[in-house]
Length: 188
Image (cartoon, rainbow, N blue to C red):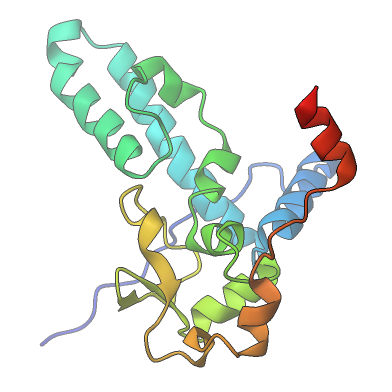
């Protein structure tokens, strides 16, 4: 079989790692998206930098040369759900780190209501309780495609599929009773 390929870093470290504003922004993102460490932020920043670099280089080309590559990058970002279908090449330059972090499996599991917190969604994923289209995914940083987003659910063999499980009861959103003030507003 041979030796495995040498593992390489998938991220670039910050040029100035001890700037207070950068440290505070990274710490805020760590808490908001439930990331394990700053390497996850750096990996997604590198991915964002790569897409924006491709966008800048395509803007410098002539229209004939860039048309096919422009369709490819916009198609990829559309499939990932990062950009809408009607977006242009200029929209690639406007991407932010939050746009990519919102497409992580960990974030989508929390937003779909399958967990009570962002940290619990990470735990459910790593313990093998989450599946996409029936296929177990155990990587919280998996970037979910737009087509796969509706198919995020518990794995069939997970005990969380039981409606009497305490976590399932806690995460189910009860129907909100309509208060009298809401009824009065709707009559007006």
